[in-house]
Length: 149
Image (cartoon, rainbow, N blue to C red; front, side, top):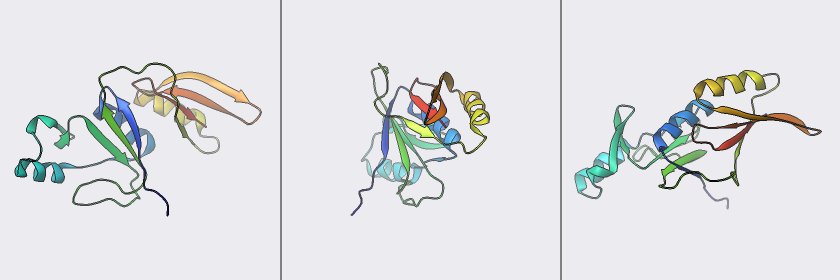
């Protein structure tokens, strides 16, 4: 039996990171507002744990993005497939990532995709040329490395 998983990414501003990655990947920012409203009404969550984001109630310190074609739970808004979850942490990023995303642009589209991602807030770090291929290493708005092939 395969395990269900999500990739969790530490962030200073989880909502800004979710917005960047949703746009970068063509994903959707999850809408947990129905669940949050239910928990607030029951007194099971404090108002201070929420903010308004994208015109709806959201958790202050975490937010996920999900693939638009994957299933999700309508009551909670949580994706049941490919997801990235951004959680607020107090410490800044330090050092090189031990895990990173590779974004595959498709034949002949790498340079245009790099330019599009830069327009969203990514920063070009370096071009890698090896016998196995060529790709760009970029950083997202919080300095997390990712590759565009």
